[in-house]
Length: 620
Image 1 (cartoon, rainbow, N blue to C red):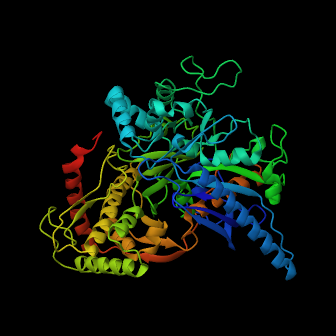
Image 2: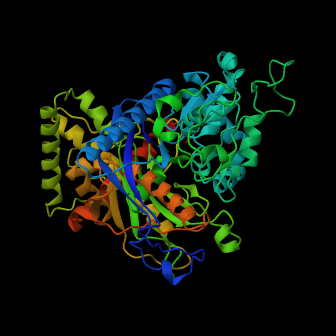
């Protein structure tokens, strides 16, 4: 299951594990076995025609609130349809005497992150206003963020950043939680809240029938809240203290005498934490016929295939982690360097990101490794117990193009693609010209400079309340010029992220090999212009992998679930497995050296504009 911001998707995969594979396993990171990516190990194959997608906007723009009831209904509907398709496929193959039977062995989740949803004692969401996500740029949250910055001071802020791997910013959970409880209008909702959960944990709570059970969330999803100590995988003490002692905080009481619980030390609103593959008893026996209170579980009748005690349910993982693994960028280190793979995952969907995986065990004891420093401008999130994800993200990626399409009234596909073609012609003329431009202040090929902070800024400046800007408008500007400036602006911001990522890949005095960018996300996969821009800006090859194109995050979930199943089949659930599969390159875009020099000018010009307007951004 892949719950995204623009769609909910469910896909069936055929799992191949221990019976027909041998993996590259070792608990010792210096093992020669891990020095080269392995083509062996568990793998998954998407079942043809076994998928269902519901297009929807899961998040309300700017507020960051989640349309939680619609999302939950859409997830259930997608599972309905995929199970129906599997039944249909089984019947068709039985008629052909293929004697194929499909047994569901696991369900995994990828969700957009950050996502947190307040639930009552029955595990039901208390209301849309009590939800939060990464796409928040509300004024009240920006103010909370700035107040918290002022109260903590630079030293404590930096210390928290290094513990959690995330800077204090409106897109993370802490300032959004404070804003929720400080708003007196939310008190009726707040008094009903038992816990803050994630979308996947709410679904598993409902399906498993454990109505009074405290369903945990995964390290991965918790890390994206910006409140997890990523080294040890527990809620950061200071972040939890700030949250649980904030003004207005209350918690529903399970007792009979009290209506609420506030400042008497009994606040416990954050969920328990485990790894995504934790073999908890209620997640390893399929769906039960009865709920914990003795009532019938409606999913027992609805999803008969999930009754089997062989079905495992997995907690959710962040969509960024899933995209990396699905794009075959879950790289492991070589014996010569601790910097991991030469593959870097770049995703442009609704948002955009550039990320790579590093080995970092939550049980790490070596001081030089445990004291890993999070580079300013980037994040460091927990993947699972053995690895972390380092990179940067933009709240607006493909959404910038969709905004321009709406603004320019390019409603028909014909007019939209015609505008993109003209933008491509502008870039081709500019890239192939021998005139390199006089200085960083020279104009863009479009004559425009855009700052694409339509929903605020995350990487690299993390300015709270940042806003977008287009500079250089004249009477000669056409829709194609505006569209070009949108495309250029997103790649320029990714270029800054990639520069920091490349610096972070150098560790222990070793310089990693020349990187390769593995592209994913609908916006990037469909646009050859954007891929060329990305290659030219980064001076690296951009490739699309045939296995992971179009559904990278979905495939990533399937691969992580397959890895967990495989480890248990081998009888060693704590082993580590090399997920970095060989690339099956469907398309390669090579950089243009002349164009790369121009991108340095474009980035410098955009940075100059950001510095000029940043004084208008709260928290700058």
